[in-house]
Image (cartoon, rainbow over all chains, first blue to last red; front, side, top):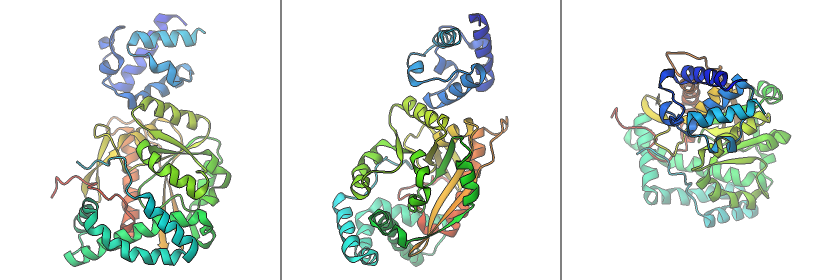
Length: 81
Length: 297
């Protein structure tokens, strides 16, 4: 899957799940700040990624995910592995 | 602030005295000692006493003298249940009788192969009757505040040779806790929460409970509502000296709904069931701190 397609898919899901405007998402934006979530809301993202991309995640996968870009990188690596 | 501090009262010397008494003199002797211990707690556990007093006066609207009596009864019932908890693994468990309500449906859910979220409360004592869970107990994960777990771990091991369930500790590393819970559920195991206590004021859901505003931990309801797995509310209540009832209630799956968040839909159901149980056994509500917000007073 192309990176652009991954970004389009995940942004659309995040916007719907957290009721945010996609245009506020930027690659360098902090995921937690932009989506106004805390670590507890991470469960939403975990379930969403599993449902949308069929990827099971582990704690280590998210340890370095701070920005949207980090998330895109993670998804790209796992999907195209 | 109506926030539980993550610590459970009770010293190990007290536990040892009661365990010794149960072993050598029996359960009823231990109950009898409570008549001496309970009056001690009234003045020497002032915060607990104040909370219990407020509970009887404001939640159950008991008159002044009746409330005094109920505070004593409240402590006594709490002591009895702690004694039962200590006595059960020492061979007394077979002396207790258990009634199970909706147990067949509960077993059907446990046997489905899916993960199950179970939400209880600090009400009655669910762990008694553990032998009925048999091999199922190997798949039980209790989500417990780390401070509380560290305090009772040694006592559990001393009494039972080790717990027959797993513990997922809740501490500052929330991400680790979330992934442990998710991992257990993905493995088709059962994850048990207590839905009535929180340690982080910022992660709560507010809901009216018994006519007064109260705060509940967001975690259990948020996680349970997102996993699309069966959710069971469970309560074990002391019916008389040697009889407990186990009551299981099956939550409807929350729907994505713009008007109400999924975790609130689940909390609605939990509160409704817990209120129903509390009206039947009000003296088995064991949150001895200011649980309710006092804004409506």
